[in-house]
Amino acid sequence: MKIKKLLNKKIFSIFLSLLLTSGLFLSGFYLGLNSKSEIEKISNITNKENEITKTIDFEPFWKVWNTINEKYVAKENINDKEKVWGAIQGLTASLNDPYSVFMPPLDAEIFEEDIQGNFSGVGMEIGIRDDTLTVISPLKNTPAEKAGMKSGDKILEIDGTPTTNFTTDQAVKLIRGEKGTPVKLSVLRKGESDLREITIIRDNIDIPTIKTELKDSVFIISLYSFSAVSPGLFREALNEFIDSGVSKLILDLRGNPGGYMEAAIDMASWFLPSGKTVVIENFGDGQEEKVHRSRGYDIFNNNLKFVILVNEGSASASEILAGALQEHNIATLVGSQTFGKGSVQELVKITPETSLKITVARWLTPNGNSISEQGLTPDVEVEMTLEDYEQEKDPQLEKALEILNK
Image 1 (cartoon, rainbow, N blue to C red):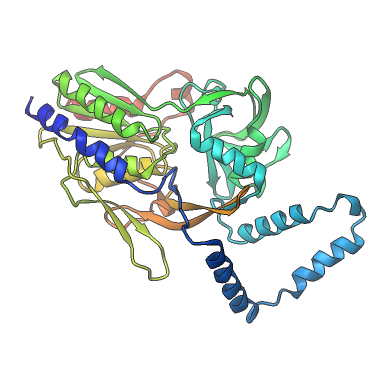
Image 2: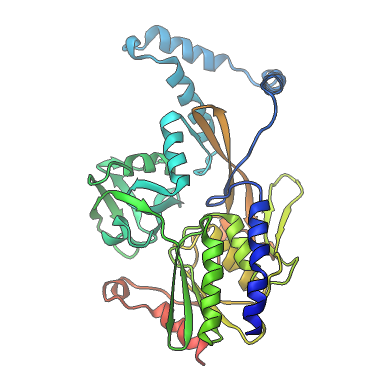
């Protein structure tokens, strides 16, 4: 009861902290607001252009531009605005960073729909791993999961179009579509040599958040995403945990592709004293790092026995939360290596209809380990085989229950 009273006393501070938080973080990305006047913006651009033109020769660019206008066979199809968008996309592609992308009007519109969390598609998070389009995680109870997509699946073709050198945004554009229409994916699964052809029927997607259950005297919280409402739902789940009267907790982050960084910090704060490092934002080039710290709700005592389940579908905010609680010796990580999505993207409005999503920083764990470079290694590694999936066995959960019930 003492813990519950402390928990309830913290409710107001949670909502206050959420209200005071600035910026929107989604899968390690945030919206930056620019309050400069248009004159200031133009002046800054002009000054920077003058600096650039002193060292960069743009003559080849304009020679190609003029040659296209003069010689390209389908002159009637030349659209100067589309050429500008294409040139900017090429410029961002030169960074060799799959998460830095220029979005022309249609792509920007799709991205805005994704942020709102309701859209028509198949329901899976994708990323680039080893230069290949890879499934981070199919979301719970979505067409992708029901069709049999798995974390780690490599998507080599989308409706017959090879995905070589694709960005995630290019792939999303092809996979998304109207409800009720099919999309066929050619998939290479770990441990297999033959391609699988998987057809998924698109549907409206509502991103799921959380589920709780009590099993073998262990309370299990399954968290599927870090949305804007996740901190409140997580608080309610902790209340259920306390009401259950047990002291053993499993937080299942398997297949959780991430979401709001602030949600991960808020959840970590239930287990860490005030001021403890949750995650470090590293901007590179000798710039000062930004340390994100626990808000110090810290209501649990040493009697808590805590395991966090992770796998290759655990990414971004999942890795921030799991990494912090692992390195502060609060929880034992069980499962398989996480995805390794540890970069921060800022969304910059280029025109009213277009946006640039650009990587501005990388996440480091409290001990300074890069999430992007290696992901998280569990304290107890347990792999899920294809046979386990097919027979609906869960050796990772079984190991977690075994550890807590020793």
